Amino acid sequence: MLGGRKKGWLLVMQQFLSLIFFLAMFFIAFKFIQLAGTQVSTNMRIRKAYVYMIFPPAFGIFVFQTFVGILKGIQETKAIPEVHS
Image 1: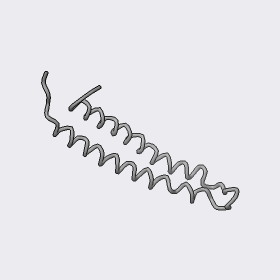
Image 2: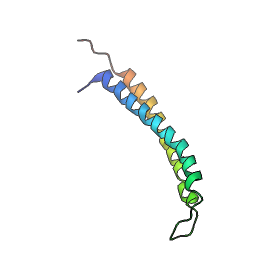
Image 3: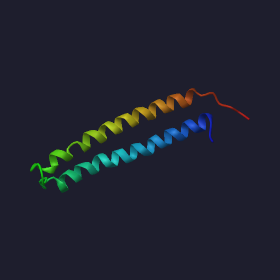
Image 4: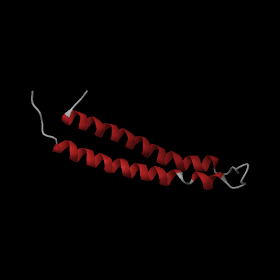
């Protein structure tokens, strides 16, 4: 329903909210490893901490990609010509 710069800024705001979520999950992932890391998996008999260690790097990549998306969105939004009615 929105067009032009308003749509661009709305998309940047959505990316910013995603960034906040991914940052929170990045830090929560470390607490999750500490909480469940001492448990041993039933079938493979390995510590669950080894499995859960994928979360911080994954959310770190999400944070980086979202940050790049925000910068790209700002650049593209500023390039849209302002339309006056």
